[in-house]
Length: 122
Image 1 (cartoon, rainbow, N blue to C red):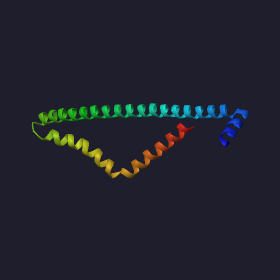
Image 2: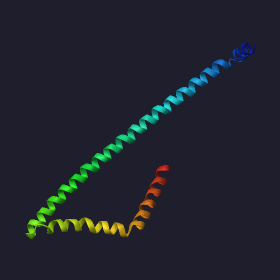
Image 3: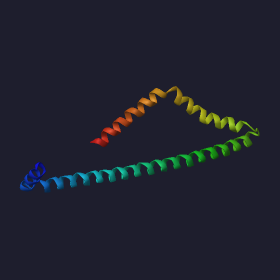
């Protein structure tokens, strides 16, 4: 009895169509949101994979260039190890500088990224 009364009121006020349209709209919006999230995730993952591949290839390039440079320097000085020590120093000095000024460099990048994020949100 109560169900019939509710159906009658819904039909009288045409609320059943509104309720059906509203639920259809909500379901469509949820599906659209799911698709947008999938697309964004695919973009982020593909971008991340590309960065990883580029990093690995760049790392291999640097390693082989370093070995070649060390061999060349060693042959120039006619000493088997001097080239490797020199190349190690070439990498060690910037590493030492980064370690010594780590906090200042970190603050610089932090301020830079905050400024860039403010520019993008405008």
